[in-house]
Image 1 (cartoon, rainbow, N blue to C red):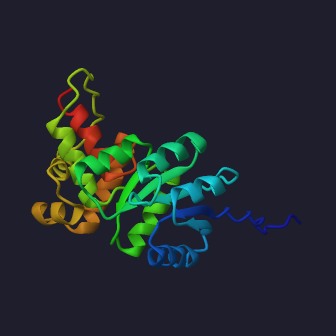
Image 2: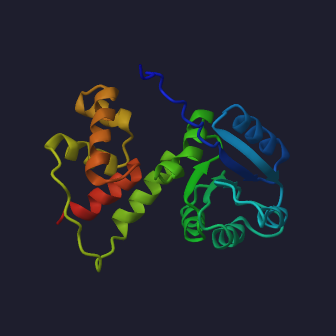
Length: 226
């Protein structure tokens, strides 16, 4: 008689996380946060970009958290060096600054995401995981900044991309998100539950082939005039 036992699947390899942060207290806090999650593994922490670049030359972490305010080599220059040295590694800025020029300079330098210091631990961990699920983690304030900049400075030479068939309700939700509303605010304005809006968003993400609120809004803004 054939066995009906399901063969054990090998455990997924933990995501390897590196941290570049000059504040020793924040470095320790981040290290402890990573250590609490078995799906994450800390490969090392450094207080300067120079020390990190020297150590990471032989390492290939999955994610590097990078502070912008570093002594010596700047966070932006560190991002440029890391993106050239480790193109498959996700680089996420963790900063206390949300000025537009700092955000866009970091993204141009190679950052895959931009999270603000003070982000709740659960959201920070979700942001660390996001690049390996196809997303680009952005704190809500940063996401709103990106969306506003996109609305203010559209790319006229880029042809509009036709949207797939969105329902009127799905378009309502995207219109509200494009105005800077978060999901809970959209739910309140439409007199829907937060869970219902979240379900709509899952469907929207599938239709638009995106994985984040910001990507969905940018895709919507590009295609709604098509």
